[in-house]
Length: 77
Image (cartoon, rainbow, N blue to C red):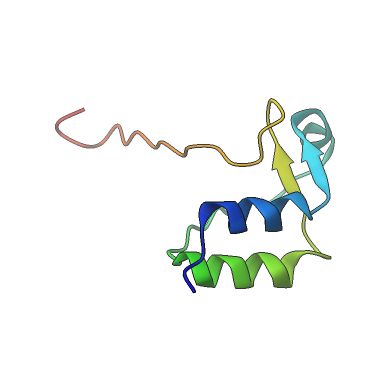
């Protein structure tokens, strides 16, 4: 059976939340952002495994947000 967006939202809602004010209090020394590509089934498996060790960031009461990146070194920007 295919994994839906609702399945992903349900998994995220099971995670403890952290909001932006709490994030400011956490020292992110030597922080490295790494992005991965995963299909929905893989993402659901990852979220299930991360449930007890990670928190879902909550921004304006939303746990899923669109990620837009602007690269200023791209010629057409």
